[in-house]
Image (cartoon, rainbow, N blue to C red; front, side, top):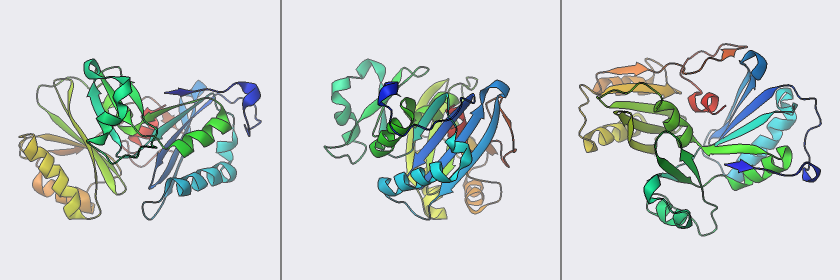
Length: 279
């Protein structure tokens, strides 16, 4: 999705020399993440996370975003491209042949709680013949519209599914779990096709494992044999990994699917998966 504004109409746009930088911002009600890529050297020069202790309002997230642009010197540069990734549960995939742009609310209302006033938009997935209908954080988009004039935005599930579908095709299903603070996405791919996508909130070990096992049961998968790949905010031998490994036999961690280098190497190859792959 593209947003544009004529140069003469741009308000509060930073006055800096072009630096051949691209910026990616991931927005959720649990915090913000920033990634800056230096295009000529293909190097990620800046990774920053601002987390909240609990789920907050879009207004609080906007305050945190504004403060980050004031307090972080790297974010005060001029960027060639800005991409925003919206993270929430208000999304659903629709087969392209069944998609009608006039029915956006109808697609969403069966899967999520939406208001009549919600702005609904969609992403088209090039490698899945489907459309992702979702509600973005409009107040965030409006602020960035004023600040940058032009930027792209997508839903996190668009970035995640498109990238995972690029993996080599296999006949047996693969179960991906993309873990964030307080929620995770499950993606199941078989024969190069999206078999399942959903997002679940969790606060305890029991929450975490329940939705995973429930999904496996509903799709008639075998926890003894299904290949399960972890991405995001999870490490070996932490609380959530241990309970997962207790019930599922084949658990591994994903690897980076990009060729970027890092100014400061992150601890994990599979963390910040959607943030980095949105660039």
